[in-house]
Length: 136
Image 1 (cartoon, helix red, strand yellow):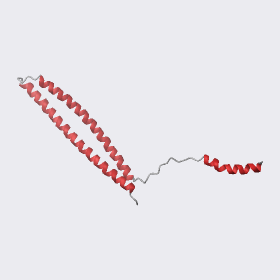
Image 2 (cartoon, rainbow, N blue to C red; image 1 turned 180 degrees about the horizontal axis):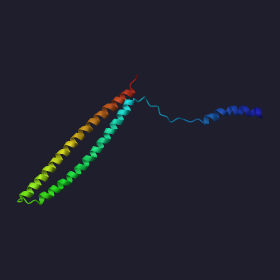
Image 3 (cartoon, one colour; image 1 turned 135 degrees about the vertical axis):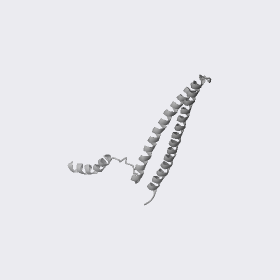
Image 4 (cartoon, rainbow, N blue to C red; image 1 turned 90 degrees about the vertical axis):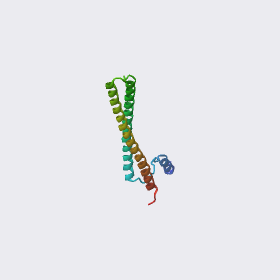
């Protein structure tokens, strides 16, 4: 009986070994240059800073809108015969106009920075894709 059992165990051992095989879920990825990873991180940092600028722009725009409504109310109730009230309104209006001009300059600078980021992102990501697919 033992003589019959040993060949059976030897014959079934490979089947038992195959049943215990695990398969890796690792993905083979081509080489990635360190410069591409670092630059991509910098691009994301610039994007995060632009998002903060956009939030500041939105807050300032809301404040400017509130101030414009207050100026409109002041104009509706303005006594045109009162030169001191007219001078006060004109001073408020001039300050508001300067605030709007400053805000518009900030928006233009932010738009320029966003355009540069978009161009840099497109150029650099294409550069990294080219390096990954190039044969060495």
